[in-house]
Image 1: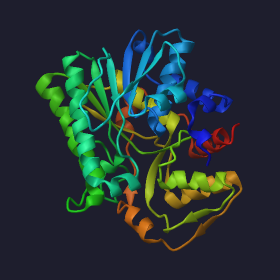
Image 2: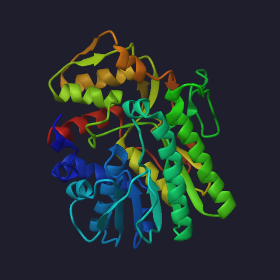
Image 3: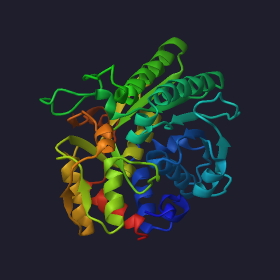
Image 4: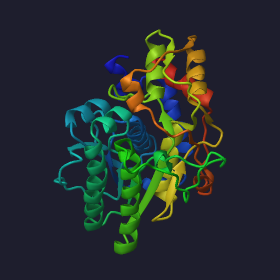
Length: 355
């Protein structure tokens, strides 16, 4: 897959992508309340963060909302190349592993940045843990001292660990088993600890925090370093190849097209209760990894073939057999999903093909 496919300036040439931004804006509860606000966001070049940033900029332009989006990242030029230059957008330098040196009077902080794919947290489990906890602590302190309205922390559905397979779905108060002796647990364990840090800040300092736990999220905003299964499947078919499965793919998952994830995330930011956690999942989209592969292959006119895994495949494999998230709590805020699995996959492929 070519580098150009991760450049949001090119994604905007797609009528489908722009329409999906508009749909996500319409499905975000309380969007109007972001008018005249400054929003600081980390992780703006990732799958979720890039779509959220585009949503905010789209709303700022279309609704004359006077929104300022400040994207903080290690590569300022990359951010500018991706989102362009306009008075509603500012790119500033920020590294997860460093102290905060910028000075932005943000009304809201959205913290998404972090190691979020198996190759990253298998290769650097220590950095995964410290990056999650320390970066969030610094941003919480920054928000508290600069009197931000609230901070939204983007956690992960992986915090549920190996859950009870008899449950229909995992609600926010549920907690499954995680092997604390396994370095592979670095990612969900770090997320659990960071969630508690956010809740503790809300209680101890009365600084508003909200946590979201996205389910497996896919979409056109793909980075070249991402090696998650759904991204590999997309790469296969876009390169004219069949999908190669290195396991039976029987693990059951909730999946969200990025537009649904982003609208749920912003809904939680705007109208979620401080100190609370919300799953972001579409209740109508749950399937096995093999079924996801079949859906992607069918939309692209390709096949799914099975092969033996190598050592890297085995190392990246998760022990979690089921990760189906309850959406009752986020739906109680008034949010509803808009995209089926078939629609989300079709849109992703069409957008990445330049349609």
